[in-house]
Every structure is written in structure tokens, then in C-alpha cells.
Length: 329
Length: 286
Image 1: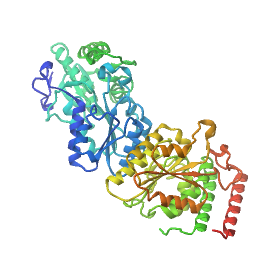
Image 2 (image 1 turned 60 degrees about the vertical axis):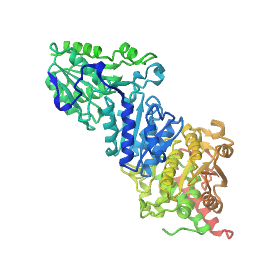
Image 3 (image 1 turned 180 degrees about the vertical axis):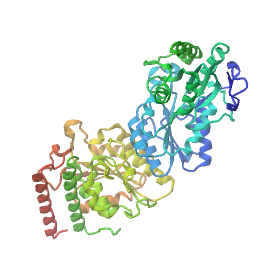
């Protein structure tokens, strides 16, 4: 049981309070600026949430390639599709509750089925958007986007992962959905941490149980593995690509451990948990537990209060591990 | 492609297109009749005269973009594409059949020359606006033509696009609306009133041209005038008779969403169109 050295995570990984805090949306904003420098075709659209989606970083560098559409998420996507059809590569940001929340059909028809390259960025996803309440807490977005044929779905786990994921979308010439949170999360990866679309990364090796996580739940899962050290040997996998899922890495781990817990800040119905269950049902079925929103809505509160109340902290991952191990044959 | 500049020839071509439409729909045994027949004159004017296109080179970078928003009237689009040379006319009879490039609603990647995939209503204006914006960013003079229906003015997405196109001063965009007053459930003004449509667009800072959708000379003139606007997109609000040319379909909303299924319906429709052709040929005024 040990940390995977090639993952190149930060040295002070388990000292939560000493870690730099940064939003995944900041990684998106910085990634956009880098993409703008690399490729003239890149255009950025936003629906009246320019600062909170960090689209302003790009707007300030490349104002002529920034398109404000106003409070109009259907237009965000369909204008983006027109730009893409005429040779641009559009990055379209709003809050995930609104896009893809409101404009799923436009995304499906004008990008997915229409086979155009564009990136839908869903910010403030999950419940950690906090005090705004359940209307603004998208927990369904992973599931709804995953069902669109040919759509790549990315959920980066910290700000550096978000930067790398954003950069990687330029060379993924199809519809991509990328999900960000509002809250600042511990930055626990480094510039040297591997990132590849379609590849899950094993960060922590173990033999008793596998935890497959995405987004901020990756760090919570690492903390859970640490807390159980000496008692239960936990393998932690960052599945930052939900689709196409890296089922080889996940099934290889499941064959070794014989039990799997998934952890995500989203509904367990059809999200990462659903994807892993579908994959393992084919490859190597094992007992599973699912950490995430259990077919319910969030509410107002601080991010920490809500994550605690709805059981998405490291202690909840620990509990899910204990539960699944009881069913392991 | 040689443009047809003679009005009489354009009208005869539109009659060819109408014949294609009824034959295709009869063969397919499903599909929409009234919309395509109503829009035959406008599509003919656009494809055979006004639009700057190269059907034998559909990816030509300098082409005008033609965006069909209400995909269900695609038989008229397919007929014009075939008869301008995008694909063989015989292929029209594959409409809606398994393996056909002529999907029941147009699918861009299935058929070279299509600029968009459509069917779900209300998103064409925005896509056309996005294309027009991209062409402006690239500093070209190409024009974007968007064909839309009156029914889809009930979609919120339409008005998001209408606001956006005016805000971005997209004078390289012309939207042509099939104002035929029918939708699936009945008359538009009974289902959810749209009037005053022209004034609505004017209030949204569009240039509006109202035209008789079956007066070929006026249609071509309106399209040409729309290209010379500055700082405003143009709406050509076309007064169209749904089912035009086939007497038993004209102005009957029941024919919005069904084909001429029986042999009698087909032969009556073709007889009506033969009469139309005879009248055009006899008409000395054009």
C-alpha cells in the first residue's frame, strides 16, 4: 500500500491545511488563454457569467474572439454551433445547472449528432456551489452528457488537472463536456502529474478495495485511504475522464481488490458510479458502493456543510469502504 | 453552376421542384407536404439564382451558407440540391429510407452541401447567426441565408438568436420566414398568436421586407436587397400558401405533416402541377 511515485502528487499531500487552494474554474480560464495563443480558431462564448466561469481571462487577452450572448443558454450553444460550422473551435461556458441543464437538446443536435468540435464548460457544478441552493447545484450533468453519443466527459480533480484537461480538448475534435466547481479545492497534483483524456490514473496502490473517484472527491478518497492505512489497503484511482471510461485500469484494479467504491459530487444515478458499474458488469463484477447524491436535491449552506450533510467527505468514503468490504466474498 | 435569370424559367423550375416533392413524399409514404410545396418558389430563387454556391464543390470556402432551420420541409431543400447538381436527381426517391443520405430531417454529415443538422425547431437562426459572426471575424463578404418557419417563432431559442443577430449587427445574415399560418395543431393565430410578426422583428432592430412568397420577381428582388443592408440583419417575411400548387392541400393545415399516400392523391397532385406548368408557359407577362 503506497503512493504511486509516477503520479508526482505534491509532497505535503496529506497535510490538507498546508495545501494551496484553487478552483478548477481557474484552470479552465488559464487554459483558455493558452489555447488562444496556440490556435487562432479558438473562440470563447459566455452567457453573462464571464467572471465566475473565468472566461474573462480569455476576454481580456483576445476581446475580438470573445462572444457575449447574454442570459441565453440555448443561444450559447446554437451560436457556438454556427461558429464551429464555419471553422471556429468554440468554448461555451455557463453554470452547469443552466448549460447543459437547459440546452441539452441543442447540445445533442447541433454538436453531438452534427459532429462538430466544441467544448461545453459547466461551472459551479455539484453541491459545493453552496448558499445559492439546489436550483444552482447541478448534480445531473455528468449523467445527461454521458448519454450523448460521441460526447467526451471530463471532471478534473484540481486546478492543474483542469488546466491540462482544457488544453487537451483542443485535440479532441468532437463534442466535449468539462465540469468545474465553484469552491476552491486542495491542489494536490503537480505539473508532472500525468493527464490524458481517456486515461484513469492510479494515485494510491492498495489490495483490499478500489476507490474510483472524480472531481474534488479524489482528494477526499486519498484522505480516506490514508485514514485506513494499516487497517485496510485502499487503491485510489482518479477517473477524470468519465467517457470514454478507462475500464481497463478500473477492471485491472477490481480484479486485484475484489470490491469497488465510486465517489463523485453528482448523482450516483448515471454518473461516474453508473459508468463504472456498467463497465464492471461486463468486465469483472464485484460488490460496489456509491458515494454521491442519493437521488435527491441539495440545499443552501456552506460547501462544507452540504458535503457533510449529503455524505461526500472522506469519512463517507471510509464508511462506504467498510460497507462494501462486508459484502466481499 | 449557371444561374437561371429568367423569371419564367425560375417558375418552371419551381414546378419541377414541386413535382419532385409530391413524388418523393408519395414514395416515402411519410413526411411533410404543405411546407415544402409552399416554399418551392423561395428555395428555387435562392438555389438557382441568388445564392453564391458551387454545387459540384460543396466545400468551396467562399460559398454562401444556406441554413434550413425547420428541417421537416427538407424535401424542397433536397430537390433544389439535386437539381442544382449536388447529387443525382434519382436519389431523391430514397428519402426517409434505410441507408439514405436523405434523412427524414437533414443531417449535415450524411450529405455534402448541407450546412447544418436540423429538426428540433427554433435553433436555426442562432446557428446562422454564429456562422455569420464567424464569417465577419474572418473578414469575408459571404452571406448566410436562413430558412425558418412561422411556427418555430414560438420557440424561445428563436428570439435569443433574433436579439443576438441584431446586437452583433449581422448584416450578412438574411432570415427568410415561411409565413404560411399553419402548424401541426392548426392555424398559428389559434394555437399561439404570432402577429404582428414584422413589427416584432422591427422592434428587435431588424430590417424587414415583406414579400409575396410566390412572386418570383419580388422574391429575387427582396433577397438581393437584403444583401445590401448595413449594420442590420434582414428578415424577409414571405406570405406563403401552404401546399401551393396542389389544390386539395392549399391552406389545409391537415396537410402539414402527411404525404400524398394514395395513387389518387399522387395523380391529382401531379395533374394540378401540370396545370400550373401550362399556365406559366402560357403566361406572356413573365
